[in-house]
Image 1 (tube, helix red, strand yellow):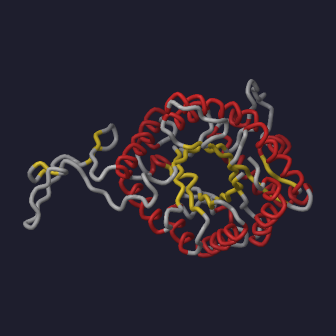
Image 2 (cartoon, helix red, strand yellow; image 1 turned 180 degrees about the horizontal axis):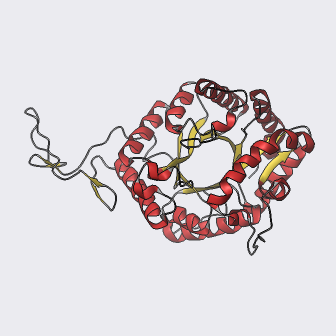
Length: 377
């Protein structure tokens, strides 16, 4: 079983008060994660932090810094919010990072959930415009893949067209090239560099509904879940395997090409873990509640009554890896048995927790939890 670390960066604040502090904390966390044997460090993307969070919005640029300070750990984004990026710049930047890191990049894509973010980047990136957002997401991914897998590419779509009309190029030393020109008119673009990994890095998608699971499988993207309880994850993993098998003409095993991310905090006892982490963990869940919808926390066939509160007592048994090492091992084992999970992302940073305790959380998970699943298959 593989274990990776995840952070939104803003959650790694501790005593940090400046962007320089945040970045330095992230460097320490990543270097330690590599030393402890974590598979990857995954970074989130958010913008405009109204509550003094989300102030380091570019996981690709941060990944370049982390790659330069490490040698083995993989560098991922969970996720690049595709509708917020220009597709050519997204393809270029990720390819550069993949080359800089010697092929250690994992690429995650998402659609975005917060209405105050998306519209600032593209009119159709607003998640409240469901059809337009989904169309923009899929078109952006289509363009990125075209760029990575073709020497020259062109595209005509609802949101983007490349090359743009009336693009011309001529040079006295170079004759017109029919591979990308018709006379002086440019018919295709050459985008460099190509990724280090061939044909491109592993591609992921964040998923939270049956529809997004189906989309990920149809597009051939690996799927990552955050909030659902184990039984709901299993149901969606079965759906993913079914759709992916139909698309690719081969059987996909339960759990194959899929991962789960969990908010995690390991301490000597449940009481200490809750005392340290409850406020920080709950702030993230409460903030996400109106945007993702309460259904993401339900088991199959379950409907939450209006009076149900998404408080600690509701969430801890369903979707948190918090408590003593024994508590956490038991929860990971549940995911392993119910979902056949073989890749877990550990969200180890939480608002308000000092850096020393954040690093200790990583250390305890690596020392007390990961060995219990060594060689597990």
